[in-house]
Image (cartoon, rainbow over all chains, first blue to last red; front, side, top):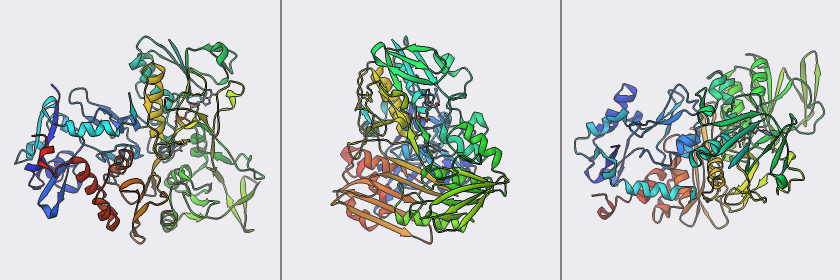
Length: 156
Length: 421
Ligand SMILES: Cc1cc2nc3c(=O)[nH]c(=O)nc-3n(C[C@H](O)[C@H](O)[C@H](O)COP(=O)(O)OP(=O)(O)OC[C@H]3O[C@@H](n4cnc5c(N)ncnc54)[C@H](O)[C@@H]3O)c2cc1C
């Protein structure tokens, strides 16, 4: 059964543990600026939304890539960036209508959530279960997916 | 069912793969005129900058990729299309029969009608062969003149600068990127380039080029002249449609296609740079010569060819560009619409700029300089026509709140009822 990140903003206290864990897992440093999951705060911190890639079915980033640097991991379902192949053209960063694949100036490549290969550290680190990793069929992710449908450039 | 695809660029290759997924039994042949494995033009700058080897430009990396998918890749040039007997004629003298045909032949470069433009020291930057020629000639320290500072010119600029040449850019228009940036943005990019030692001459015409002992002299409109060891011409392109003469396939600038990517001749489709298809923003038929459009066209044309009627809502004009590490992007109707409103934040010294254009409370276009995080949401906002409501006024005050506006208006977390649990 494929799993997905389930995000419940109501439980988020914007403690940034997820950003720290993500940055450490991928970049080896505790630096929220390098995280692939981002907490957005509203009303001066009274509300917060953790936000990252939903590994959407449309996979805009993957289809826009000119050199096949983004591929789907058959086990986790995550779209993964192969850094050795990515040329840093950034076309994926404008093609993704969710803004969840971003250019990293330090490496000259793009970065996105890869579900940590099936053990997402943000979910692991979240102390309030605002981020959990659950069976895809469970996630109430539908809202985001509905959104993905609206963003489609075609309709069958 | 036999599908013939003319063109081995991204539009053609993505179409072939989509056809294979949709119609496992179909016969699929790609005919490409260049003596290369299918590759991406847009990877050429990274080849020139020596970030990648030639294989790095290839669209697909497995050596048996096309064999494994049972897609035949033929190296030949199509010289004519004969819809009456459903054949295409090839330069080799052979011909191929089709049931459905996709034309994904892209464009070719054009040069301005100036004396001397055919000198051997003048190259384009369009094909892998061009890339090899530039790599051969653009040695560190050599004097290189780049003609044209449009989107392609500016990408090539970046690659040439990486080769540490002495670079001069000559652009006829009054600013860099005249079709992708407004004056504010174009001027900022120009100043940025000049700060990094690139000479940029805007509102300047090359009137003639002469060669003597391997060095070229370019005469300029103001009577002055510049010397060059190499001239890279990026002044424009034109769709490859000549071979359609007499075929009945209707063309304007490119091949006219409808919402199914079908041409005026039933069973013949067109995709990518060669296709003049529906524009998401205007509803008119336009050419959007960009990678994302080639990819979407290729996929949707193939679904229709395979008998899955699929309606294309139109392509969104959008670009992202890296000019010596200054990153700029443009989306949709960035020039605005009559009666619309504009939000603007300019920091000339910090090289940051964001311009949002509204039609009512919907973002219809944008320009950004120095923005790299979450820039894709601008596409999301434009393409899903998100009604911003009271967020519009906040954005008019501070357009940098665009990500917050997007989240609030799309994630709907404000009301607990819309939460998953
Ligand atoms: C230097 C450079 C940088 C670029 N950078 C970007 C960028 O950053 N972002 C972006 O979005 N876009 C960029 N582009 C544009 C992008 O590369 C094109 O939009 C894309 O390649 C279009 O794909 P296509 O399949 O329609 O056509 P093409 O890639 O041009 O492929 C056309 C194919 O048709 C073949 N062909 C032509 N005529 C015939 C014939 N008669 N018979 C048989 N075969 C034929 C050609 O050989 C080729 O294989 C760049 C282009 C260049 C040159």
